[in-house]
Length: 454
View 1: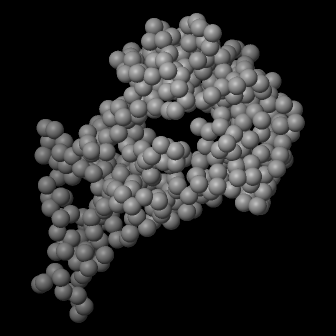
View 2 (view 1 turned 90 degrees about the horizontal axis):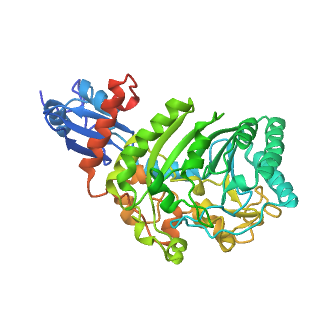
């Protein structure tokens, strides 16, 4: 019987039923095995396929639509019967309005006690006044009401936020009370250099809803102190580690800003983080992140040769393989209407990389009304330009790229001000797939199987 014939009791082929190979498959032969690893970036799956499965995937024109392989391949997303790119674009439009939550990135101060050569911020002295704190609380209230939000998320940021612990404590009390009054779940995190993460400050943060902290260590003592030193000079490694050894009421993401000068520290620092967690009983997780160049860092004129410009493919591959997920509509919160950063003066930003740049503010916490966002914005373009970087990505090359579900067009700030930043391993898909395959194999061996193996 001709498998392509339809009607009169004959069956349609898979292709006639609309099935076709996903445009977002990446593949790599698995060394030492007669199988191919295929990662589907839209569905967020990675699995091995034997020669028979690969053959059947290539003859969708000839196999019946109810062949068992069709359902198996479809569940993993390697074949689809819809337009994935159109779906991504719909996700992008939807992501701009968020999903039931309001998120504020609050800078109690933009001042900092460190002078890191790669920092993208211009620091200034001072801290948030009582009047601005009042405005922040009113802004949170207005945003919750306008969004009918069921969650209020706070990220304490800076500068170094622990230079103003009194502001964190005062605002936390009021914001937690507001969330309770509005029936919204409250959660908070902090990004800190860790130098002022004393037991007193740690207890305060835990009491006021902080459940996660990001602390940066740039390698072991000598490598770390070479870049993450005090503003007036002086080491910081020992004091940060001492703070992390003490009991902490929240988990810590130990960030390693990787550059040419400390790349060889990755293994040692990862082992040190594990040892520190075991000894202290604290929940500490190591993760590396390539340092990116910035205009502010370049103007400092020192140690800029250490910057790796975000092009370290190996580091990027390892890190992204760990956080591999299904496609999403937006790259970051800058493309979500209900995510706003506010500096110590009350200026509002769509991106926390701009908190030190008042010229990129779209309004103030005192004057902006989220119920009438465009008419009350002091600079509408500074609001809309970030939202409009979301999918559909305003770039034909991006729209055609097979990496689109993973990068979603890349960092909005870079796209707007320094040009599109593609994933550093864009031209080495096989290395990425094999890193992902290896990570999933490790998870499976440890009993932590995920949907990605399904």
